[in-house]
Length: 118
Image 1 (cartoon, rainbow, N blue to C red):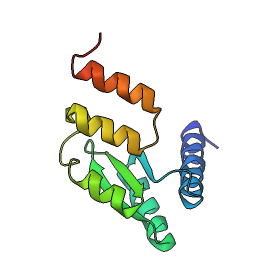
Image 2 (image 1 turned 180 degrees about the horizontal axis):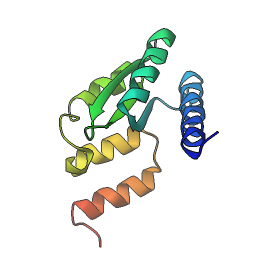
Image 3 (image 1 turned 90 degrees about the horizontal axis):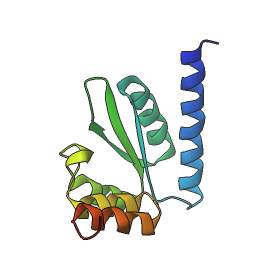
Image 4 (image 1 turned 90 degrees about the vertical axis):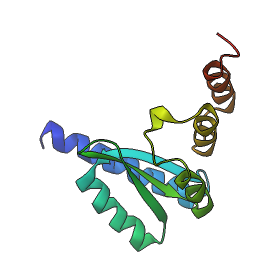
């Protein structure tokens, strides 16, 4: 097994674990960044499992794959027409909260981006 194959295997294990957490209700929304080929394969898997998903181009070779609760994806659809680094502080906060990031950390990040704290 090559190092590249090992990396892909590790990524696949992580993806399958994210599906498991979504199905168990631990997560409501998951975001993975990957190559377009992998995303196509994983979208097929999500379709077979009946899990809603959407993709966002990142570069010519990479995409962000979001999957999870359909309502969360509907909210994400309102702002993924732009790169993640161009999200407003409010959109960034909302996405981080929906992905289950530490809420105190998200508040600190939001306040920092709004210039409320240094």
